[in-house]
Length: 125
Image (cartoon, rainbow, N blue to C red; front, side, top):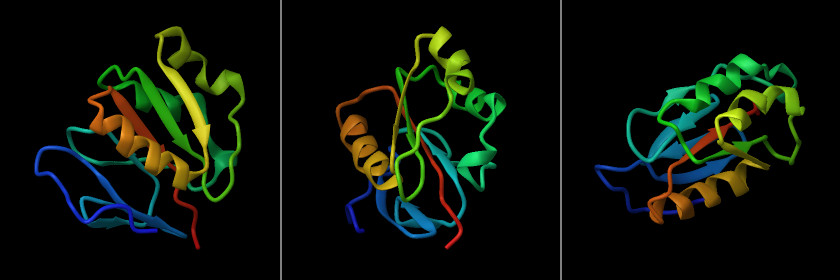
């Protein structure tokens, strides 16, 4: 699904998503990513929801976001609370949703100048 054609040179906008990819600032990513409004888009070494670990969630705390949007692939799945416990202890909220919803929600929160990070699981197609 194409979300936006416009990109800003100063913020990371999710411009499209679909089976096996997510586009950020019109650049295609075929692996899981961590994206925040500012800074580089980072690879997130997650190939499947079942391989999530507490250490992978620790990667999401950089920049002290107020909320992490977890895009769980084509369907919504909820991580075990032990996986997100370290983020919750820091006062960082975690919202799980399918990856399409996470992409759309990220763009809205980013435009509202919220401290948001999206961790998008891109499943192999």
